[in-house]
Length: 411
Image (cartoon, rainbow, N blue to C red):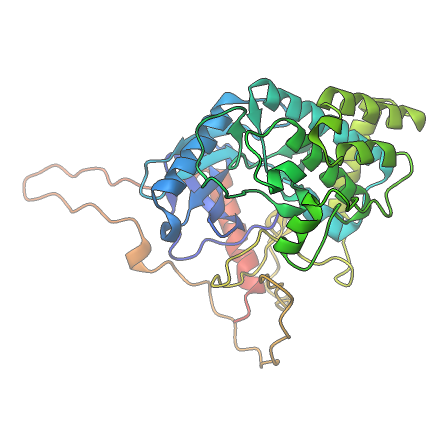
């Protein structure tokens, strides 16, 4: 997961969490790497001021309540939140690893036995969610992080209680990700059932095994048309033969024709056992495989950098990988060309410029620093000035961020 330095306008502290860098962004908000008073790393999600309104606060509050309700080893743990703050924020467990979408686009599809292990793990995790009468409703490769202890599900922003009479969407409004959306969800059918998450899991496993989704088209509208058309079968080209029967059933057009999650777990186990492996072995192999791929350097020709979708007006950022945090770059190494991330198709490369003399990293403008309390008057005792926490780990991380950023900055 790429980490970039804080921007001058970014907050330094949210609640009890000190912010150390940026780890992701989207149209609705920004995700920061934070640290608790005890040194616990956290992913701190913040709604952008430009989109903070009553509806976004309600959605944020709903996501917080959902995370308080569910728990499990495959769910990113809830750490804290304040939906009523001027900048509403939510802190969850920080998972040091790429999402499934980035991993597949960078390193290619997973072997069938590892796809089956992933399916068993996530189906079991979703069963725990459904046991709380909840649906995820937005399961997709970008919402599964491949951490050092295995995959974990994140982002319950669209989660909803089954049979709920409370809705934050208009009567005919559809929310979700089209390429992973079940036909009934795309058609606006309400209330939805657990079968929508089964379909989304099937779409995600197909992507993990092949690098493509059941239905793809040039526009979301065209994808909606393909998904909701009962005469258009999902594209299973390239799927391993031993996974085709399971994927076919999970991606069935009619919700009642899809298997329940417990059956998905059992059928994934059967695929694994048919290859002479036990489920525990396959789970360990999945984690080891993704960790090894992360350590292996990838060529830029077949390994595009993919980040969370950024709004069109956002400025592309210089990326800093976790490896940059492990060893600060030496001063005598010339600054490499930064990897720029921008939405949509890649823009043509800008003309080469002569490299100016390196400058030290910019300091945060005085207007963006926390205000300093006024000094004591004559005869009054001197009050203690509040300061930010700076643990050894926080200082080390901040120093490495600054050093890595200075080496990669295009100025």
